[in-house]
Length: 158
Image (tube, rainbow, N blue to C red; front, side, top):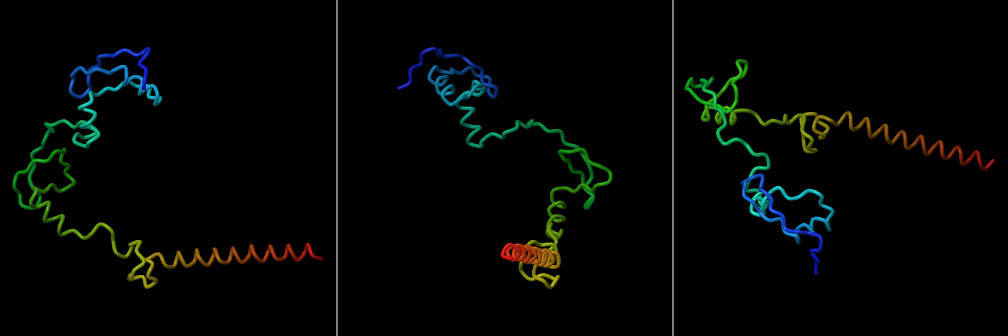
């Protein structure tokens, strides 16, 4: 059983909710036994919320500023949570979803890392030539090392 000698309950203020909470002598001894040097900055309930993933790790402001603009596709007014740039089109939610669905997949199939069939013929997703050259170089290096080792062994025998 723990002895709480040298430790006294301390009243701390939670950095999230602002409520006072008690950092008990037993908790202090536990922190000390684990080598934890910082006192807790959140109350037990805020710590539980934070661990449970119910609160974002970085607090974000609730009322983010929105900017009014015109959709580049349909011409209706829309608002966005960032400053629109002149060189980039801005879409309303509906047009954005249709634009997103019409776009091809992000990764070009000819540069895929899969080893299935591809247009390059080698089946290596466009990387067959380089990989084959590297494999041949490795085999050649291993063969040269083996030949040098054999020559050295033969030289020692004479």
